[in-house]
Image (cartoon, rainbow, N blue to C red; front, side):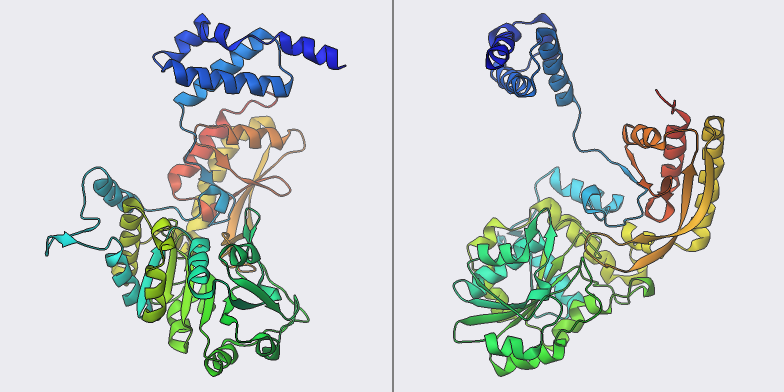
Amino acid sequence: MLEHQDRDRRLLPSVHSLLHNEQIGAKAGRMPRAFLKNLIQQTVEACRTGGTTEPTQVVEAVLQQLQKLEQPHYQRVINATGVLLHTNLGRAPLPVAAMAQAAHIATGYSNLEYDVDSAKRGQRDQRVRWLLTLMSGAQQALVVNNNAAALHLILHTLASGCQAVISRGELIEIGDGFRIPDIITASGAKLREVGSTNRTRLQDYEQAIDTNTALLLKVHPSNFRIVGFTRQPTLPELLQLARRRHLPLLYDLGSADLSACSHAATSNADLRPATMLASGVDIVCFSADKLLGGPQAGIILGKNALLQRLRTNPLFRALRLDKVTLSLLEWVLQQKLRGEAGQPLPITEMLQRPTSELRQMGKELIHGLEAALMKWECQVSLVEGSSSMGGGSRPGCSLPTLLVQVSSTRQRLDQLDRHLRQQPQPIISRRDGGLIFDLRSLLDRSELQAIVRACRQWQPGG
């Protein structure tokens, strides 16, 4: 067996021969030889590991890798899943106007850390910090590259080597396998979990506090719900305990609503930093690319003395935002501050899209799909359903929507699903008793047209 494998591996063409292959040379064009050699070595190793030894197949594999280099990996996709803040699809889409402003800044020099009035060095985040304090009533604000970084910075600064007390029911996993306990440990703080998964009492916190306790930590259960036999201390109760024991209370909201008035469908009363800070919470942190509808960033709001300590931590420099993200965040915050006079954000428009508009979109899509799919004996219908916020923002909060459902007893709709995902602009639908397009998560009517065009090109079994 091993001798057979060794013989097959010896059939692999050498890197030297592939470097001089005419097809590869023509495809590579003027790529520097050192770069081409690295690509060939990686491809040959992948072929060896995968058991591909035929020389013509190895050459084809190299040509495919060269083809990939010519195409961007990141693509704009059509989100027909009904998950508005789809983490895998990039969460909140940004407005064209915001991107135009960021492009204007990025394609030239800027006053990123330069005070034009004084002709001296300035602070890169000064503008967004000011806007955030206006919107939240916080004494001070900081911005870093995401909310996990925000939590890490806070714990590293205020609780390194000391206890951070948290309920077991709030030790959540935030995505991609990362968990709150991991972040606490990595920050240098000592995790002190109290209570049980479903029930934690105030006395559990009180009994855990000792001379080595640095802070109380509360984490919003932003991506799950525990129901039934449950109990958690109220926020006022935790605040009273924190004040009595002279400890700061940190609240990781995960997502936050900074608008002047909340849209009724999203029930965001428990995600309002202004309310938390006014009640006495010392620090809150949350993501900018969830309900706020901005770029990826972590926002920290709270007491001036505490945030000044965060700012002077050398780790803050490693986590700071670049000029493009700051420009995008500034644009989003400006629109929020202007209220109804500001330009609506895509996430807000999708949240507030009325049923009448969804129904009209559904009629248009059905009309196009019937013409495209009836010849393949597919049925198209408009049904009621529900969308979700996604992104760990509002678990259990569903938004009424309308769905266009494609069904068939004769065709394999998984083939149509694959065909849609292979489009130049991939179309991501959902499967649930058929192929479903959720109208609430579509950005505009041009995406309806793209879906119809793609379905018109489908050849079953092709």
